[in-house]
Image (cartoon, rainbow, N blue to C red; front, side, top):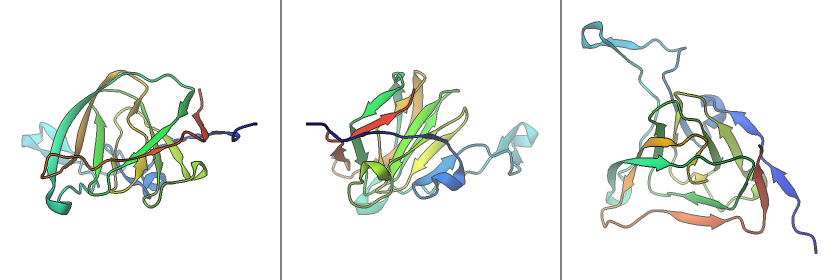
Length: 171
């Protein structure tokens, strides 16, 4: 018996407009003038991220994730979501990563999943409830992660296995 057909997700460029249904893009946008601060020794780029960590008594948690590089092509087998808070990923260096997402709601069908390729200097803030693949770094390195710390020390992470699908990222 033959399984489901292979679905290869195209890697889209990460833009604020394309990513809007899933959250916000974090970057020093060259199209928006920065605010000059610190007596002219620095520029501040305000990002549009809506960090949401306060639901159900949660608070902010700042972490460093040390990621191993992934190799493409690769089969995707898992999505997760955090219903009570946003999750922000910002590389600490010129690291590339792939963001695989689907809209908040019931567990998505493979055809509802999107993939975005970041460029150097870009991060993402995933909106609460957004389905996403765990971090897919293409370069080994560290990421600053800001997410919701539950008040009881538990986790707000729901998993959805894609075992019966043939969902792939291209090489």
